[in-house]
Length: 214
Image (tube, rainbow, N blue to C red):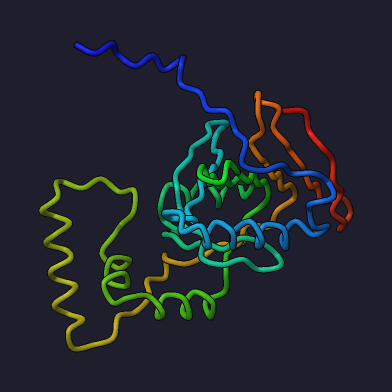
């Protein structure tokens, strides 16, 4: 029988690239676009997957959602406003995002505040989705308790049958947010755990750059 894997012994020495102050753009949103494009070009799986962290009653909660837009004001994603995270963000709009692209030995950490998108923006994205995704948004009462899987499948079948002949209507509880960043950290893995960490902090409308110890 093979020896069990010792988690404490799992390690990798990062040697892919460096990240120096001379390498980085002065606008962190533009720098993010550069890194995101490189993740896309590397054909990484789900490069737009990001961990969204919220806090309610001093209890943090995290889950992965998908980035659906990069605007000058921030990072866009869509969800159910009536979900747990929707309720949490309604009470406390301060959130954090984390992207990790392991193959490139990179991560990006973001802190900021969320704001809901307009109905016009929500409709535009909702109707750009495949019909199955539109129906899924209607069927799902996200984060609510289900009796069993069959209850979900039955609800799907009923809604799918209805929309064979008419256009789906976007649920009012479904829509988007933009995360407006106040901090953006670019992390590049380096050898011997001496990683490069460059942090942008928004101060009176201007981005300030500093290097953090790994």
